[in-house]
Image (cartoon, rainbow, N blue to C red; front, side):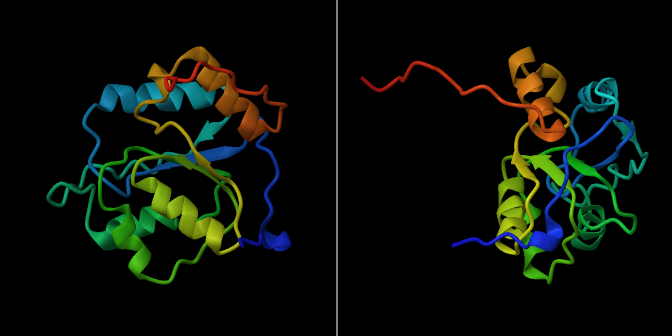
Length: 165
């Protein structure tokens, strides 16, 4: 059973909170989509702290393991880390001890291993949601749902039709 550490529980985001991006998996393929994703978060009132160091490819990865580890664990505390891309490589970073800190993290694909590792260490705030490079292409309902989750607003139940009959 996972037990959250009460000392690490995070608060909802507010306008003016800071976010950074982190490339801990594959390289960014479309810089335009990356910048459009940043714009979405800025339109929500978040402030982008430029840490753009995502152009140091190492094979198919966004950097060496050490470079990507430093992006996952920046020196300065931040309110939100928005992952740029999934793919492969994030799990390699989990072979080391993780100095987790409170804060929000959003991503999916192989980022899921990072979110679950953090949760198993007692930290909340991990959202299996859009990557910064795909955020601008999400449907409006999806963006609003993510915004509501991050900012502590109520979230309506999901409804849909099963493809299984």
